[in-house]
Length: 167
Image (cartoon, rainbow, N blue to C red):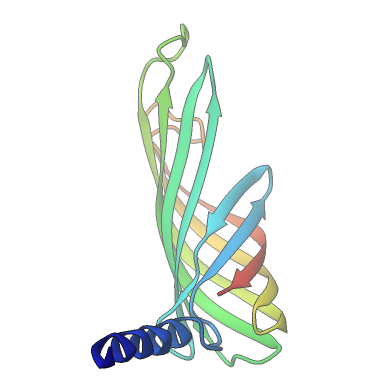
């Protein structure tokens, strides 16, 4: 009986530590960037640094699937109600045509990388909204029209708006 009590006690402590009030552990964000919608998973690795994996997917039955995966790093100047940051991001976008696509049957991979600057406003420790300005260098596949320069290297600017819930 004593062993069971100790195990139950240790489990309760572990669970309470898992759900303890710890600001900025991991978040789930929805982002809007023009006509693109994405999911971000900000993970704080220190008091001022967050790694931010990003995912985006679009699918049209007779056209194909367009999927993007990226990773950003953010270095926050200060983390208060208003938290400005500088960062860098890198990612790839992959188009896979549908077998039903009669006009386009070639996979294409485009690369994107560049600096960003943003600001996040924390309504509470667990909820924020942010805006980000990006400078993007892009390397397109030779048949990609994604960035308007097939096979070329481009530079463009973009903005992103996001809303995040932290756990």
